[in-house]
Length: 100
Image 1 (tube, one colour):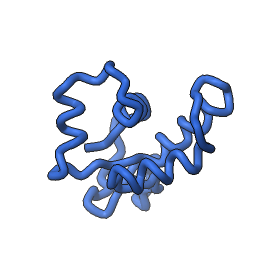
Image 2 (cartoon, one colour):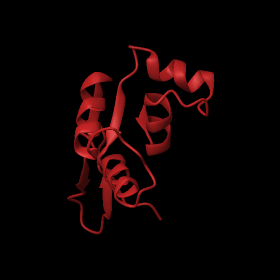
Image 3 (cartoon, one colour):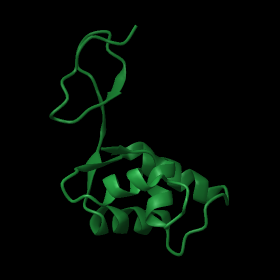
Image 4 (cartoon, one colour):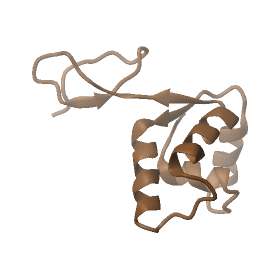
């Protein structure tokens, strides 16, 4: 399951906004939770603009959430195929033709 920034923040801060089903999915140890590099970037930007209050630096917050919640980093990589734009990729996702 690929987590977006808001869902991750809501769940790790016990915010009531996520639906019970989303929280249950997050807490199910059988699900692999993917943490995109973009989420880390968005957290750092929100923090630097004063829109996100954290008790620790964004780097420490991100590192601690990855470790404490068994999140799998999900890097952004450039597709090697000619004409392919930047995509989010992991070894289990093959690069194919660009979206049109």
